[in-house]
Length: 308
Length: 98
Image 1 (tube, rainbow over the protein chains, first blue to last red):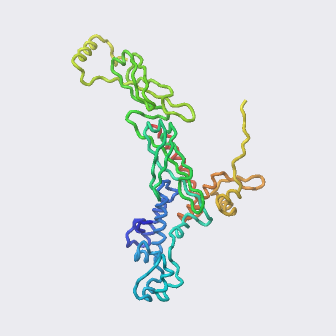
Image 2: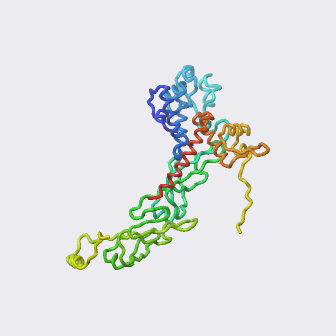
């Protein structure tokens, strides 16, 4: 809880009670762990709640303005005591009981040392009824097409109250939008109640060559004009490795070759298919000889692609 | 021939829900009366709840203590959050072209 309370609420130190309340209500609605599944939201919510609890109470706010982060350790009757003690010197927290003798009568019977902030704040999530289970959280997990295809282990870190790291096992063949559940890794429960779950939502990054449609993978298959006319066996790189594709003679651009089962693996059934779409490519700068041959072809051929 | 398994319905009694969520059974009954919890009533008038009820009760308490919502508002928030869940799932399943 190192953040300044005014910063936590995003208000100026001179803010009025109304401004503080307005800022708090707005942020509380935004970061409540049931409304905002982001793993960092819970910490943020606790922070704004603590800030508001202090700043909404005029006495506590005055003390906070005066003493800063340690204001809870300053006794309520600080001023009187400072007067009695004569020196304006205050000792608080550890060792205060023993130290009290040295100050005359002023310190007896006051017990404010070692206040645990969690004691003060625990109530936020406790409500009336004792332990309350934690909320579920969501985080995005960005994968390349190859990573989604192969699956495997992946280390990820999430910012939160304390930075958390996980080694996640990704099953082969996860799709964009699928959720991976990490049981018990969500929001903290109060008391001894169970924590919520953390859901990782898979985002498959766009790939320069592969396009995914469900479990099917579409890929362009560039071929030369003569390969397209005469037919050829050409290699094509897929997430599963290189495969050979037979281009049948007379394949124009747009012809789709289906490779059954070469799409995304499916842990619960049939894998998707891979579609290689023929794209006839021509040399941008043909050599002299190539040019001659094409000219000869142009003279001989009566093929008209625009006739039908 | 198809085989059918005998499955015990997964439902929780009022007492079980109360024990698992650490609440008084009367408070759980009141939440049901306020329609914050889905439940069914059997022939003997006993209330039965789904297993997700425990998580919903935790959410009710968090919303009440965290945003000082009253129970009518909590009912509305629960409904809206459910609707958002459905819509987000739809959006996710439509975004299959990458």
